[in-house]
Amino acid sequence: MKLIIPMAGRGTRVRPHSHVTPKPLLPVCGKSMVERIVDTFSAVLPRPITEGVFILGPDFGQDVRDALTDICDRHDAKASFAVQSPALGTAHAVSCAGDALEGEGIVVFADTLFFMEPGVDLADSDVVAWVKHVDDPSRFGVAVREGDRIVELVEKPQELISTEALIGIYYVKDLARLRKEIQYLMDNDVTGHGNEYQLTDAFDRLLKDGCIFRTANVTEWLDCGTIEALADTTRFLIRHQKPAIPEGALKDVVVHEPVYIGPGASIEGGEIGPETSVEAGARITNSVVKHGIVFAEAAITNSNLEDSLVGRHARVDGFSGRCNIGDHSEIDG
Image (cartoon, rainbow, N blue to C red; front, side):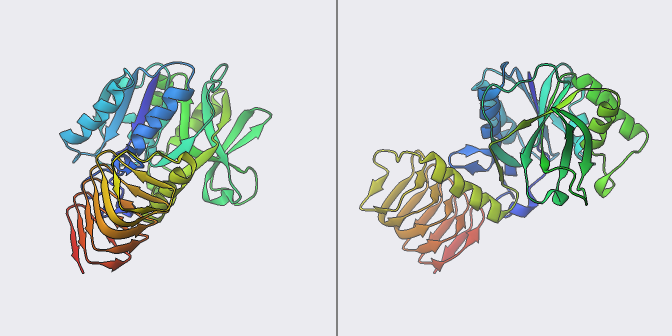
């Protein structure tokens, strides 16, 4: 079983935190988005993951490849890489996987987090599309079903024909067949929304060719595509996972749980939490930090922060209020 993960976008809506680190590799309570995706599928699929195929942007460095290789190594899977340049749509992104589009696999876009029950049934389906019930389907692509089979895929319907939103996760029994349909779109310049090659158009061709499509459900679908969404998702994970606080991380600190504190982080004096994530190696001294994210190796001293994001290796000293600063930045009060 392969995981095909397009992640070439720079994540402009979560800047400044994606200036250096691609959005899918930003940590959320100690694990990057892409690692959480790999972990989830390793836990729920009926067959083990054998290969992770990552479609990267042209400016992604070796450090990104090394991080993704480490994730695959932890799951005894091979890591493979392709580059998408230029970005011409979701179907084009998948096509960049090239010869890796053989056999069965999961195509999943690395810009959201999700949870699903184990034991996903992939039998007797050519394609399984994961969906989530939404109140306003006009903002999404939706799956229209008759019984347990999908009969139509509709992008942003203006009439209420389905409340099952497509969330960008698909099991494909025959990746080579999907590759063929994507190639048809590109050879014949069949574009959709944004004048780009859309994966749903390739799936629609498979559907009309008689492939059996069914749906599977996620229990949670969490957006990480904006600063506000990333903060909300972090708070959700802290509330629901209630992570343990590492021994020795706190000294003379008032803790308002729930909080996440990563390995090697230290907090001395002041208050921390609630719903605050402090990533690995960060240091907070004589400060109050509430409802925030402090990324790895950041340093906060003599400050009072709320609803703030402090980037990797950033420094905040003597500041009170709300801030959002990127990696290696500094604020002095």
